[in-house]
Image 1 (cartoon, rainbow, N blue to C red):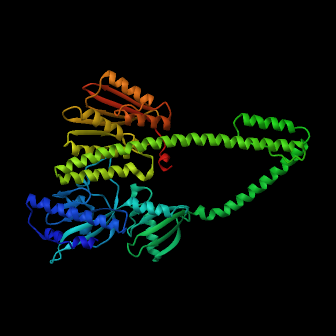
Image 2 (spheres, rainbow, N blue to C red):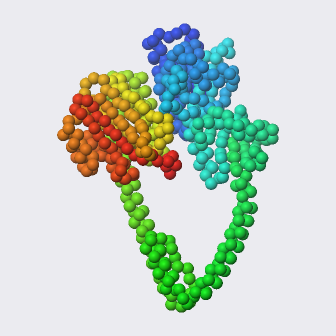
Length: 539
């Protein structure tokens, strides 16, 4: 498919042209190349060649222009900020897979952003003219999650840590995405040992026989597929057997002592044992059972008690599960009602822009919409990081800004220490949507929205504030009553009722959402939820 792109007549004619193009010609030709890259991506996915293909990037040497299939084209590019162009120069056009930073406005201009993009895996291919000069460089990009998720599925049930390295020990795929494209001391030592062995696959101990390494080398990419297993996982079976024998001997000794003890009290304490068992049940210890091998009538009494305790435990568990399932079903229903509400508004925006035939704006909107739903769906997860929830808001406002021609500005204040806090994925976007459609849209002039995150004594506080039309005191009172009572009347409070209900169901009555507003001055929504451990994201 890369060859098909580079052999396209439109691309070759533009790449070989050494003079700068007129603006009208430039837009026409670059738009044609964007269509070509988009068509190839669709064809790749339709033919099931590689589901993880993310985008194509094309750099034209003579024009000093870069075309990104996910968004638009950039001119006067500083190629020192573009990984795939630098790699093509360093290797003189050698084709190879490697880890790179995605191309966007921030990376091209070296702008630090709290919402930085993930790494990607790139395949490089160059186009040369008759004088063996590079006139174009093509990069095919694959999302790192595609490979990491694939091997995570394979590794299920296998002990140890899985990592993919290139031939220089750079990390290609790993559970910790912060080390992608980088080297670590352990990986460098593993790669050096693999080179010394000189075999395509094998195994060896490392770190003084504390860790056991199993590897295999791909003949196509020269990647190293490595599993690092603690030596205790292998040698631990011997220690487990020894510990089992010790436990078995200990249990046997305790049983002998117990039988002797109970035999000595066989005729004195049967009733006392039954009374103590009932006290255990009264203290909600429903797992307690009477273990007695009596041959008299007390055996039947004890068996009846055990049966009663077992049935009572099952009944309590069933009631608890039924309550949890009911709450989860209600939460999922409330979340499912929010998604279509935004989808219809977004499609309406795309239709409005299409009518005035703004090709670049449509491309940007579709790209932002794609990012929005990627986070919105998030593999079926209900919980995401606060950073992802804020990214959802940024993409949403990017879409709306195209519709409103840049009349909405926004500010995000997200402290680094709160970026990984688990939150419901649709916690902020519906509030921002309300701010636009019921606040800013009804007030003439420039609109502004701010999203601020802070913490206080284990509570996460999120504030969404706008400078929209606001509401009167009577209207504000009516809105607050509608949210707290769960009334289904009124479209304005639809999203706020859903969010309030979700928070109460998930975290209890100590948390919720508070609305403040003044007519003509804007509205402020404050959400409070508990700060949960990061392990919630993997549940």
